[in-house]
Image (cartoon, rainbow, N blue to C red):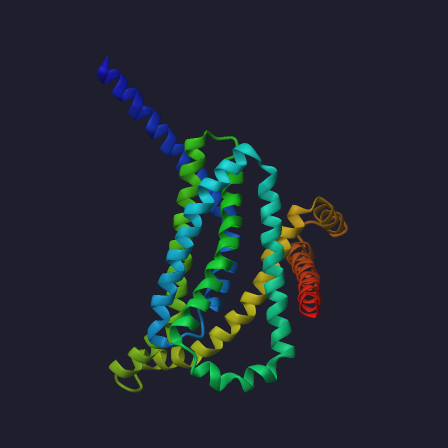
Length: 300
C-alpha cells in the first residue's frame, strides 16, 4: 500500500509539474511584451551613476525587485481569491503613476533645463551614497508597478487552475523575468567598459579593437536612446493599464480598430498609439492635479 501511495503521489507531482510547464509557457508569451518596456525603464533608471558603481546599483535594484515580488506574488494570489476587483483598481493607480512620472520627466526636461544646468556643480559635490539611494529607490518604485502588471498578467493565464499551480507559475515567471531583465540591464550599462577592455587588450586595427571602439562610442548614444524609450514606455505601459482597466476606453479602442481591415499596419500600431495617447493625457491630468494641490498647500 505504501508503494502504491508513493507512486500515486509521484504521479500527482508529475501532473502538476507538467501543468506548470504548459501554463508557464503561456504566461511567458503574454508577459514578453512587458519585458521590453521593463528593460528600457530600468536601464534608464539606473543610468547616471559612476561607472564603478553601476553593477552594485543594478544588484541593489535587482534585490529590491525580488523583494517586490515576494510581496506581490502572495498578495496577488490572496486578492485574487478574496477581492479580485481590487487588482484592477491597484493596477489602475499604478498605471496612472507611471503616466505621471513620464509627464513629469518631459515637463522638467523642457521647463527646468536652465535650473538643471545651474545646479550641476552642486550635484557633482552631492553625497554619492545619497544620490545612489535616490536612484535605487526610484528604480525599485517603478519596478513595483511593472512587476505588479507582469504578475497580474501571469495570474490571468492560470485563473482556472488550482492554487498550487497558480503559485508555481506566477513565482516562476516572477523569477525568470527578474533575472532576465536585470541581467540585460547589467550588460547594457557595462557595454562601454566591455568596449574599453577590447580596445586596451587587442592590437590597434584588429577586428576586436574596432568592435571595442564602436561599443565605447555607441554606449552614450544607447543610454540616451534608452532614456527616450524609457519615457515612451511609461506612457505605453501606463496607458495600456489605464485602457484595460476602464471598460469605456477599451471598448472605444475596439470600435476604432473595427474601422480598419484586419492584418493591416494601422491595426497593428493603433493599440500602441492609442495607449500612448491615453497615457500622456492621463499623466498630464495627474501632473496638473498634483501641481495645483502642491501650490494650494504652499499658499495655505
